Length: 96
Image (cartoon, rainbow, N blue to C red):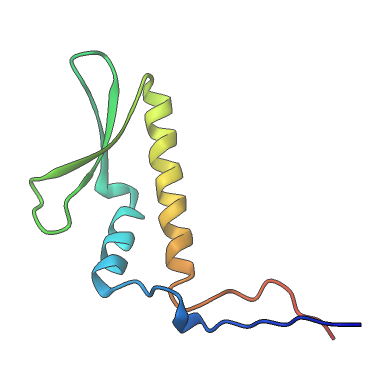
């Protein structure tokens, strides 16, 4: 029987920069988000710029307020997950 085995090091993966991590932490915090209603009736989600507090970066547009808030919550979960992997892969199961 032939068994093929391959490994890869975590360092071989692209590593996030300190700036990336700062932005991820910033957008993972819901207080840095807002929803504005546009002239066409759509709701736009925006997060506050990390460097310039008076600048808001638009992210998504949704037809309903509930949809816009759900988009923010999904974005927060996405960035929280990215932050969990900053220190490397997570062990999900071990064997004895």
